[in-house]
Image (cartoon, rainbow, N blue to C red):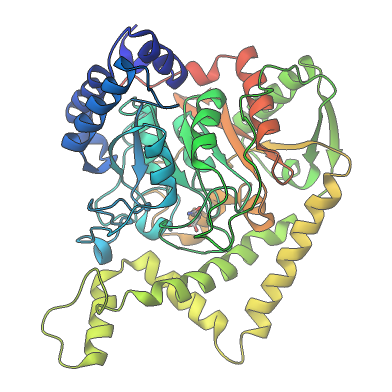
Length: 485
Ligand code: GLN
């Protein structure tokens, strides 16, 4: 087996047993990046020198029996996570020259467990998008078929893991940006409970929804990485003060008797046949594994998309006001006065999707409209969250398709924001309620992967990993990988 074909867990064992060194593994991925990434465009920055240095240190620790839990595993970070002295762009011209003065907690947590950083991955500008076409650094291609999008906003992380240019990658999910690209690229992706992973040093889009997580090739690999990233962080006031369980702990336990709910509002939608049949097949697999399937109702769930598109732009308009050309990032040339500096910096530095969100958000927050839009949206958000609280009184997990269809062709939806926003119809509710959600592969249609999503109750990531892992023990969908050329 070639090194990139091994799972993260197998690579870790190989390193421990001395079957290969981290330097070999890292060089192998760097070679693959230079052969295949020109056409995929999944990386904005490749940190070759740093990676080889870190790999060398890992190899030394293995030799002296001082290996760290993830020592020598080469991963990539979404370019939304600050990395000290390394370019951190968030996919925007606004930060195209920004070298962060410090590293995010996610990056630090993983580094102190010994990972090797291959580079920073491409993404939709400020994580706004579902196709990775809004990046200042150009679109990312789907490794399954380069005419198709990888999903977004974590499209670079998804494409590089799916093309096996990295063992796994970090990502973020505000309305679906981990789970949707996972589905479109045939990967396993988890967005944990809001507050499980620190947002310190993770560039803000919509602070009450943003959550860091993982894109990997299996539930097992995702669990290994998420455990290292998670934990209470005094530097983030919304970080949960909860112990991080061993996410692999009961991954092998059978799920007999586990109660899985199917929200009727989701299944009443007009879904393409291949989405319906692959979801039904996934449900059958769960029945065969001994799970109990129940129909449930989330009566307010259809409010999710409109509510999200008030709250997310409102928070984004506040968060992005810091990019003014004064402090850091892009600054326009020869400003006439301070007003000109602000206006031209923002006009030239932001792309059109980001501007659209800022305009909607500023409008929704303005005096006279605040009550009608923002406050109303907050009330509706509570209704959606309450529906989940009610549902989890009778079921353990909630299952649905992850996306309304397989991937779409580049350019197909870029002129129609509503069509693009509809990509996240099944993923956004979990963000509004702050709940953990996982997507994993459950089928393939015309050469493109399909995903199924499980949402769990607050802090129940371990149960999600267990249910996804049991599915992956019973099926081979997650083992399908694209042939990269
Ligand atoms: N596609 C959604 C948006 O554009 C979600 C993005 C995300 O999760 N970061 O807002």
